[in-house]
Length: 130
Image 1 (tube, helix red, strand yellow):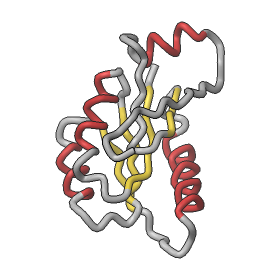
Image 2 (image 1 turned 135 degrees about the vertical axis):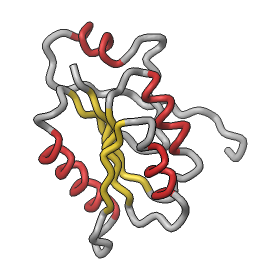
Image 3 (image 1 turned 90 degrees about the vertical axis):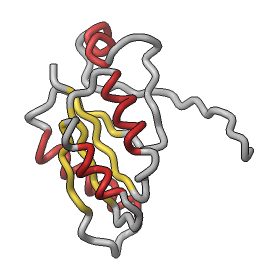
């Protein structure tokens, strides 16, 4: 079973290494990352992370649409370009961390049986600024 996560990032240079490491530890094979006009060091970080992880990297090229439209366009592109390569592609934001409570993604999906869609509930954690 091959799994990937698709995400659209903007100015995630600080968080992205932790995010990739966390989800890699859950057993995800690949990361399909669309850079949405970051003006920090996000691109440098992504290119550096490609040395240790299977990262498919693209830049969004059209900035005239709303963010949600650009995000949907990126998701559709990921499905078109990589949908046949992976059994499962997850779609997350860079501030969303999946917790499988000790399982890896492949055993989690196998245990679900014959399903074609999986949804996860959110859990908002308290932060110091709330």
